Length: 293
Figure (cartoon, rainbow, N blue to C red):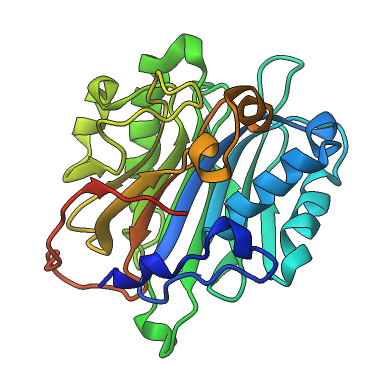
């Protein structure tokens, strides 16, 4: 089902829009460290970021820090400079300190659509999370529409000083999103968890819980596992068992210092079937990392 992943264009061919496989929807998470005016003013950094986004159907972005409201519109304009047709959803500025952050979803409008009315910040009346996650419901653009894979994405960035407490709170968020509407049980929690699978004990309260990234580092220095996509099966049986960490250094031929200019995190991603699948998963799940180039 995923043989078309190899169709992705090499780095030298990015004058034309990236060809993505039609038999998989590629969902990514990327903490673009302190993404604001200074980073947007570096053309070489923006070019790498744009090339990253074009590889995926949806990218959940964390750590947008800017007083200006035009950072993301200008960035998406750069993404679309090759003829691509991406759009975005952006959340409010969040945080308990003066350093506020925004969550963003950037998505390929030719391949997925969003229910804009579904987008919002998950309620956190007890103030358990420094930055409550942003949620939105997406659907793949396939025909017939009733066969399309639809799903909630829950974009999150935990506070590094309160990881256990925030992971426990995110477990409740996940369970809440599963019952947010009676016709949707596919929930994908993704983002910078500031934690890896050994610390995901609270997630075990979610029946059938699993995650994409395991046994791989996700920070640019290749020392820690912070970023992931969490979902439950058999509800999200559309997961194809294919995931990866897009290494900024090897993918774009960057020295470490230049890669760190882009971000201190590498993007992580997973592949899902574009059609809604009923019943237990029937596709063999290799659960192996795959390289996107």
